[in-house]
Amino acid sequence: MSSSRRALAVFCIVAGASLAACNTGQMGAAAVVGDARITGAELQEQVSELADSLPDSAGPIGDQSAAQHTILERMIQSMLLAAVAADEGVEVSEAEIDAYIDEQVVSQAQDGDIGPLLAQNNLTETSLRPFVRDQLIATKLIEELGGQEVLIQAITEKANEIGVTVSPRYGTWNGVVLEQSSGSISEPESGSAETPAG
Image (cartoon, rainbow, N blue to C red; front, top):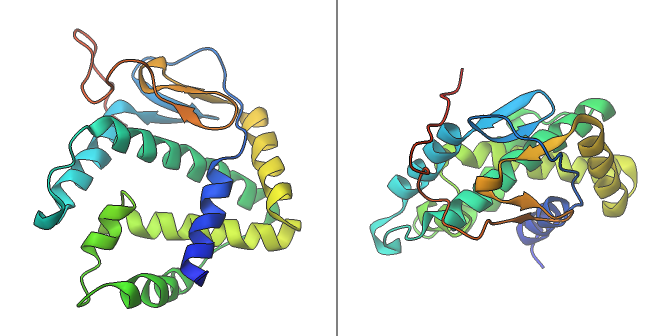
């Protein structure tokens, strides 16, 4: 297995960690992690950016609910990883991110075009760096804490400590992954407006 695939596997394992969810929601928020709110508008902005960035050969994004699901789960997981990293004093430099992108992303792109590779992972050039930062943080935390299981436990404890709430419109935490609601989440519900960020 290549190092890039190992890193992706590490992140997927971390993303599958058991996460606590509160039963209450906040109006206009797709999710709340501790005191930080992820608004529906912020989520939709990232989904729209992904759709706009897809290469012509990839075709339209289609049902946006799958992309929303992946992106929201990633945003929540990123916040939890950052919180655990802060507790452990783990940091990732911009130089480390640059090196990873050069060695593991650009080197795999055909003719230097990373667009198709990003599209396969629901990433854009804007979201690539935060995603890589999370992978590098996860890798460092595994080394610092002594294994993947210990990291998963640390993330679970952090989620319990600060609280993770997901709007039912976007799905629910079932204790392991973000489960989609029964209806489509690609369009705002009639009569409900998302509160803009800020």
